[in-house]
Structure formats: structure tokens, C-alpha cells
Length: 215
Length: 215
Image (tube, rainbow over all chains, first blue to last red; front, top):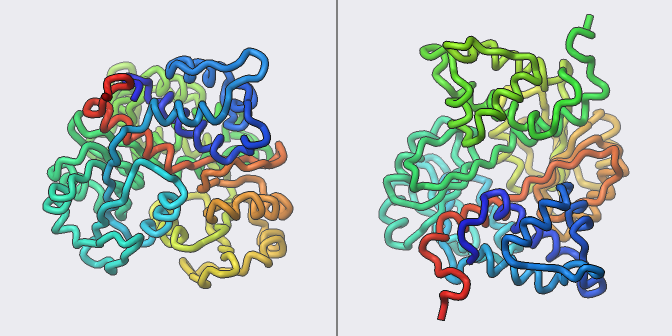
């Protein structure tokens, strides 16, 4: 791993890899920074700076050699060992997310799921589904480091406390609640409503009356 | 609406509102920019600039009056009329997302879902579920402007073509594929794997060997 990368660089490196894995690089083995930037709708300077940070340089005429770039991103952000992930509040989200994991060829492995008391005991990917009351015990036994929190909003605060108590290192937060965690626990927020509201703004700002225009 | 806001500002405004709606503002009616910034782990200068862009100012001693701030964000980014959203490739994601919509009190309304041929005809929120072959017809009839794309990766390109053909204005992309769309169609990417990989990096960078350290 390359240590001390900025958070946004890590996220973009992951995105570069995802885009390039789907790029026809057997036929087009090189890519220029501006082309990669265009695919992700970001600034080419970001691409160049991010790759400089992981010590990857391109050919001045041909651009970056994609196959090496994919490998280099892996060396920079993946860990050698596989991290175990648990889903908390599995409901319907679980199977949908499992689809991503199956496609992702990731260094992450789903090791357990936890259901709230009134959820059905859904099972996916041959992963065991436990009642939430078993969470602390299983997280310790299985050495799970990351949890994906996908519970109804009104349970989020209470269940976050239980997750912190079980000593996981990171939470991917699917709820729209702000989670209060100690500084050693990393939280990534994944707020769908913010993305949808942003999309709604840009799709209707040209047809919607401006403030003051209406009536 | 306030026109021509930068994309990141719109997304942050939505986040401010979501956080503040969950904030105990009955008891603590004012909030300072640095407190709001801290809750979202962003720079306080961003908060101040964003709110300046929508013409909202705080009290120099007390901070921002939260109730007015929530309203002002609504005036800035919401449209008067409700936009219709369709889910394409509903599977299990649909019900999970429906949960968000129920909580969101949003200006967005789920008007239809479309299933791939081999998916079961799941129904949620009294919204009709159609076969994907009916998509163009229904999108036009219902005047649907936004679609949420949550299909398996290998269907993403083909189904995006069909969505574009049906003339929607925006796509919230849950797949990890880069979507090729004409410039008038807005795309928001929502890549779960990038978030998870970022989280994995930060949760294990201190315990994982640095490049070159290993053997």
C-alpha cells in the first residue's frame, strides 16, 4: 500500500480502476489522462496528480499503459489480506449489494449479516444471517473490520452504538443519519437522497421557475 | 430555485438539510458554520460559501437559524412540482430504496418500476411493476423524468440505450459501468465499491505493510 494518500485520491483511484476494468484495453492498451478524466467527468489535473502520488507515470505520446495502471492502483490501495465485511440490517439491500460484490473481484469478503428482530432471516452468498443480538460475539469471533449499515433511519443511532461497542474499524453508512463515533472509527456516508436531489436540481433547473418568478 | 449553483454546492445543500432535519433544533435553534461543517466532515469555508450562494446569512454571534435554513435550502434546490422517478431493474434494491423515499419527504415520487425479463414482478409502495419492454411507452405516458438504474452490470449499456431512447432527463447510476449518454441527459454515479474500497484503505492502512516492506 501507498500510505497517507488523501481520501479523495483513494476514492478516485478506485473509480479509475473500475472504469478501466470495463474499458476495451485489449484493443486500446493506452489511455491519456484527459480521456480518463472525461470518462469520470473530472479535471485531468486530478488524474495526473493522483497517479503521480502513487508513482505511476505515462508515456508522453501514448499515455498510460492501462494494464499496468490497474495493477498499480491495486498495489497502492488494496491490502494483501482480505478484509471481512458484515451487513447490519440486511432486509432487501443485502442481496442487491451482494450482486456488486460478486462483480467486484474485491479484497473484501462478506462474512456475516445481521437482521433486526422483525426482519426475515434472509440468506445470501452462503453467508450466515444472525440476529442482531449476536453481533458483538460474531464480529469478534470472525474478526470483522467493516460493517455496512443499512437499517431504517430510526434505528441508526442505537445500532451504531452497538457496532462501535463491537469494535469494528469502519462503517459504510447507508442511512441519512449523522453517526456519532469515536475518532478511531472511520465512517463513509453514502447518502442516496443527496444524489437524487442533486440530479433532480440539474434535470429541472431549466424548466422550473426561478425564485421570485413564480406568480 | 436558485439557478446555476455548482454541482457540489447542490449536493452539500441537500446534505445540510438532511443533517439539520435530524438535528434537535427545537432545543438548539441556531448552528454555527463550523459545527455544521464538523458534522459533515467538511471545511467550514464551504458551508459559508454555499449558504452565501443561496443568499442565506447567519447571526454573527448565534450562527444560522436552523428552521429558516432548512426552508431556504428547499427554496434553492427543490422545484415546485413533483418529479416522477422510475426504477429500472428493480430486484431487491427497489424495496430498500423505497424505505428512503418514505423517510425523505421529498419532491420526488416513484411512479413506476421496470423489471428485467427474468426478475419476479415485485411491487412496492403501490407502484406498478412493468416488463422492461414497456419502458418507453410508460415513461412517456407517465411523464417520468428520472430513472434509477440498478441492473446487473452486464445489462447496463444496453438498458441505458433504451432509457436514453425513452427521453428521460436524468439517470442515477447504481452500476459501476460508465454510461455513455448524450449531453442533455444528466448522470449521477453512485458507486458503492469505490466507497467501500476507500473505507477499506483507511481502516487498514495502519496495520497493512507498506509497499516494499513486505518480504
